[in-house]
Length: 288
Image (cartoon, rainbow, N blue to C red; front, side, top):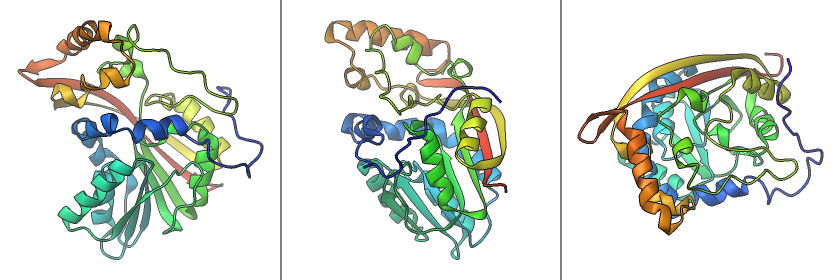
């Protein structure tokens, strides 16, 4: 198969200080993480689809990559039962703390949360029967290296199952195109790096190529389309405009642009029906 070239670093022993630096800054910024709970009103609609695809069994050990506020980690822990165990990993200090509090309130104890980057770090608690993620694997700036590292965490008979968005064109709720005139263009990736973002794995052919390069096989991408009813804040919070680089003199115009963009989805006073297009990707390590 032909497609985009994914860069695998030549020097596997180089220091990891530069890994995912842009994403580390974003996911550890209070402005960004403080509104993430609102976005969960959108993404939790996908959890039942991912749970069904995971086919978790009692006693299994699970690695939850980019676990965010811990909602999925708790769901997986309940599915594998008291003999199983789940490790939720994320690069965000604030979201890991939120996940720990959420698990404590829920009384779920067969799990733990670690602040770590699955692109480069070894996660304690394995080997795992399953590595999974709900919208967390699109933010690796060296994706082949990241998935190769994830593969090393999974037993030979195990599996990788994750949810990622389809293309941005199939997700018209997203505000990137609307805000493009108001925000600085994304920086060009440094040598050896790839672009990151929610739709970087939207092409199933390219995603399959990436996973093959990382040592996975038997790759299947299954598309889903659903409608989710949620408030405007589930898609965008105006408090992020300054964080995203909108200039003060353009702030009102940017707000009006966002309001106009969302209007097509309105079904109530502060209720919108958003069409979500995502895919569930399954793969096995090695020759499976």
